[in-house]
Amino acid sequence: MRCSDFHFDLPESLIAQRPLSERSASRLLYLDGPSGMVRDLAFVDLPRLVKREDLLIFNDTRVMRARLFGRKQSGGLVEILIERLLSERAALAQVRASKIPRAGTLILLGGGERLEVAGRDSDLFHLSSPDAGFAALMARYGHVPLPPYIRRPDEASDLERYQTVYGRREGAVAAPTAGLHFDAPMLARLAKRGVRVAYLTLHVGASTFQPVRVERLDEHIMHCEWLEVEQAVCAVVAATREVGGRVIAVGTTSVRGLESAARDGDLRPYRGDTRLFIRPGYRFRVVDAMITNFHLPESTLLMLVSAFGGCEQVMAAYRHAVRQSYRFFSYGDAMFLTRCGS
Image 1 (cartoon, one colour):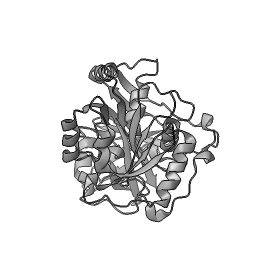
Image 2 (tube, helix red, strand yellow):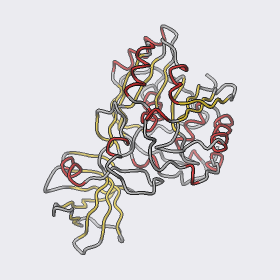
Image 3 (cartoon, rainbow, N blue to C red):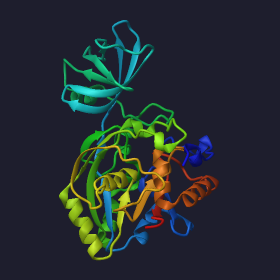
Image 4 (cartoon, rainbow, N blue to C red):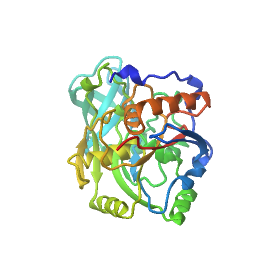
């Protein structure tokens, strides 16, 4: 397939710039993958769509305050987006400046702390911090790394709203946005219904927002993200299968995490990087249904959702969502879709 197969027209007015006042107040578009049937629901209707035997799997990553601003010794402004911490004092980052910084360039932060450009790895730069650990620097100077389509500076409220209520393992540069709809009352309702939950960790990278720059999907090189799926997750998935329940992934990151851990056919514990690129033609091994937000045109996330729910069905559902003025992207509305095919 081609990248242009995943294009759709989206009015800019539908790109959510701020979250709703309540997490679970979003709308929910239900898509039955096999039939293509859609229903307009509210997110509070979610407990009606799950059964007692079902299992929800969440991504428990937390977003770092990964955006930093500094100056070169020459005075030029520099914007840094930490992509991954390599150690306490070493990181991979995107660096924006008037000129591409060379190895040895020093960047000064607000309190005079220094970051040094140690080298480059493709589009990312190796940074070292001789004065303080990166965790301390982000806590002191860091900003919430809102996605590029949110055209406003981060605000104090984003510190809480651009995190899931259950996130516990810091390391992401972008939120697992399907999880942003869940609040404590919703989790309590699901627990009362008897729905089980489990957690994996996939630290979402900033590259998730990068466009696919090639027309032929086979030529696209997928970005790398760190993943951990523990034995407890594998056990509860197996127990769900035994009682006839469904595995419902909350977010494309949970889908990608589970399927990465089952690349050999069976779900097994996994710890390490994943570059799995799920696109139409992929055979799903673990996930039966998923909850997700609405994604960018021609993005790898939309390609994953199309592989899961069927290309024609998903693209038709997106056109329906545009006509019905659903809110799109990270702070937007949600979808619940069932898998098309085996």
